[in-house]
Image (cartoon, rainbow over all chains, first blue to last red; front, side):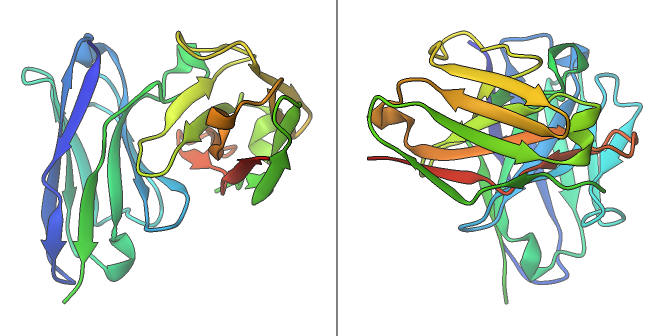
Length: 121
Length: 109
């Protein structure tokens, strides 16, 4: 079964740091780009960051550039998001998603269940 | 970065056909993908590419595109189709960024 399971969310103070993880199973992890997408409470989806299958290329939304770092360990089938200098506006459910897949219309075809990050004092 | 614009809310009578639209400059160059999200759940891909449905998605869901507008059509809407729908595509700047529309709340009457 293809599955993504996020972990690492929680409550953090403004200016603090947090690292999210996403464990993948059921597909050849190293063959696919992976992304983080977030959703603030009651709001829409916002793409945060993506990384190529090899990990050699990374991309970020302007809202997190310079503060967040995406990485992956293909030997552990795990995706990470290191979040530094957190702000209240970073409060959201963070989803791990498989994609974008250029052969599949740049879609995100598999999503995790999400992990909640709350930035508050 | 580019933007994708969706109507905030759309309604449809049970069994009727509804079209949900997504507008943006990036859609002139890239396909839109469509996601269904029900309360408290993760998004689910329903349409990708020119008009492709992942395994398990009913054939009442279809996609189309013209110019800067992509559309998701549900033919014969069912009660279980009531959800938020989001479009997404690659950013038109060509720098590998991705963008989502603001979402459309579909109500099935």
